[in-house]
Length: 140
Image (cartoon, rainbow, N blue to C red):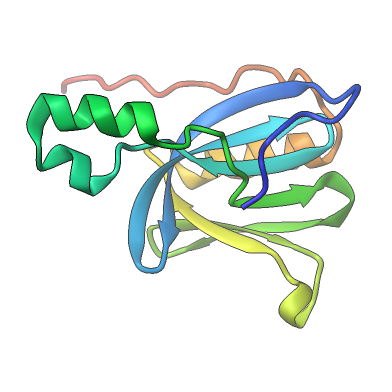
């Protein structure tokens, strides 16, 4: 995976925690909207072997692990294709075909309609979209 760095002149618009679905596993990740692309990068977790040794193992694992933020997926604004809901998953596709197609699936606590609006505003070039309404639960 490539290291995640903003390009010269590129700015972060927003960041959102997601559960990236990768090889049938859910991995904690962050979805970043920049003014040029969507970037998904996994959240760093200590290596499994370090947890077997308790707090000392976690400390040693943290010292010797690579915490560089790596890009798992990225889609530029000009190649963005669609955002779809497939069962409980939200899937973002680009316009590529065959092996050149980039898509990724994730889970979120936010509803699909919120993600659909967010992605469509980003694709349209709205850098500071109006805040999305939040639902309030009311006891009957």
